[in-house]
Amino acid sequence: MLTRNDRKNTTASGAKITTQRKGELNPDLDSRLLVVSLIGLTLFLAASAPIWRRVFLADDIDIDTLRRHTLALLDRGIGARA
Image 1 (cartoon, rainbow, N blue to C red):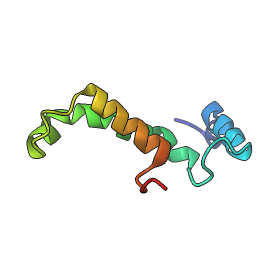
Image 2 (image 1 turned 30 degrees about the horizontal axis):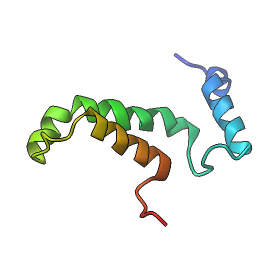
Image 3 (image 1 turned 120 degrees about the vertical axis):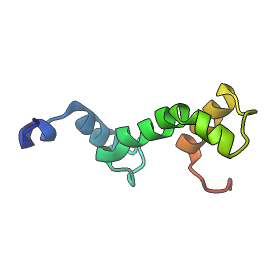
């Protein structure tokens, strides 16, 4: 079980907060959700592929398309290009 001090001193959170202060990371992101969000965006998408391929008739989506889609979401979000 993690204690309060263990959670307070985690390297990932400290590095993330430092990069946010330097302006290298979106200030709207919450460091506590970052890893979980990345896992959801990558691993869940791959693991659930058999289901969404059938539901959305998406057998034509290959690994390169998934990679481009994921990187575009990470880089630019879902807003329209300016």
